Amino acid sequence: MSVLLGCIADDFTGATDLASFLVKSGMRTVQLIGVPDSPIDLTEADAVVIALKSRTLPADQAIQQSVAALEWLKQYHCEQYYFKYCSTFDSTERGNIGPVTDALLNNLGESFTVICPSLPVNGRTVYKGHLFVNDSLLSESGMQHHPLTPMKDANLIRVMSSQAEGTVGLVPFDTISKGTQAIEQAYERLAETHRYAVVDTLSNDDLYAIGKASANLKLLTGGSGLSVGLAKNFEDKGLFKIRDNSAELSKVAGDAIVLSGSCSVMTQKQVACFKQSNQSKKISPLDIASGKTTLEDYLAWFDENRNTGTLMFYATDTPENIKRIQSVLGVEKASQIVEEFMAGLVTALDQRGVTKFVIAGGETSGAVIKALNPSMLKIGASIAPGVPLAEISGEFAKLVALKSGNFGNEEFFKKAVEMMS
Ligand SMILES: Nc1ncnc2c1ncn2[C@@H]1O[C@H](COP(=O)(O)OP(=O)(O)OP(=O)(O)O)[C@@H](O)[C@H]1O
Ligand SMILES: O=C(O)[C@@H](O)C(=O)CO
Image (cartoon, rainbow, N blue to C red; front, side, top):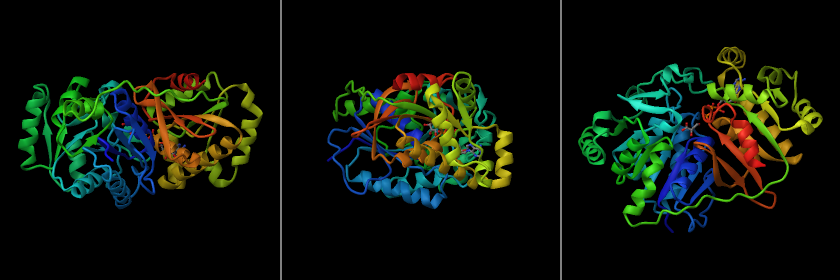
């Protein structure tokens, strides 16, 4: 039993993001929800992505889950392992990225890896070790207001140093622009004294060069962008053949629903846009906490309105309102209320025959997908870069789209619903 690439993603949207890029690059990819209890038949898979919901857990729990995923993957003797985190490097202050990377390196008996969140197609680039989102530094991009993982420092060397055991070096753009060989030499030099190499990355070409230079690292870490050249590496090593494997998903009848728990800048625009042409209902954590509104109220509203078109439930709110809500309920409690409410909604909507779920937000997707309880997702066509259509197969198949906070354009929800029809 052997799989070329074994991946561990720290949230569910991140996992489908990576799986989507891997499928596009020509690797047959299976996405698993959590760590399976026993081995499964992966003879038809070139890559496996295990979706965890570990990004905002206390570091020791994130480590425990990530190492359990790695141990499970190791039975497939993967050529390389990949820790997928967010292209905006989302982590709590104590961080999961640093501690989890250290634990994975230690488990594999390795002492050096690459840190590559860049995803230029979605505006994430790294220059002089600083992460940019389009034209803004990460810390001025809106991500400084994230409800759970506010990113207030764009300097990846500083962020990683504050979380991780080892020292962090930089492969600067000057070197990256010289190509694969120069990057490999930079890795060799850095590895003598450093444990991690942050890589400047401005374009897809840079990602291919970095991917190629990283072909012999046992552990890769990054956003989904780093994956684009890996299929070619494996092909060059004679390990497999790139194939066109865009999956055909089942035709699914039934209603669609949009559920948004993301408060990211782009999601706010997408919610505002969808509201213009569809009925929607806002979820207020304060009203739920006080008992002023209940799940039954929302389901009654759904029953009354389901014939008007695709409905949307959203907790999405502005940074000012989120702060106010969090000051009353506490940060964790506020998001726990939203996530539990979304999970309850989805369970009830599933029973009411809703079969298509468009979900915005990684934590939110984690809560919703856990409620739907699939063991794996089949990855289909891309709706937007990093957001594929996915299928929960079975006697009654369902379609889902798990959208990362800032992915997609303003019309994303409409497009996702259309592609599910
Ligand atoms: N009105 C609200 N008040 C407080 N917390 C909220 C509110 N609405 C949403 N949240 C919480 O904010 C968090 C948003 O995180 P989530 O990962 O779902 O979105 P995101 O970070 O934009 O997406 P991604 O991680 O994919 O980029 C969730 O835990 C959600 O429960
Ligand atoms: O890398 C990204 O930006 C996304 O896949 C993600 O992880 C959002 O949670």
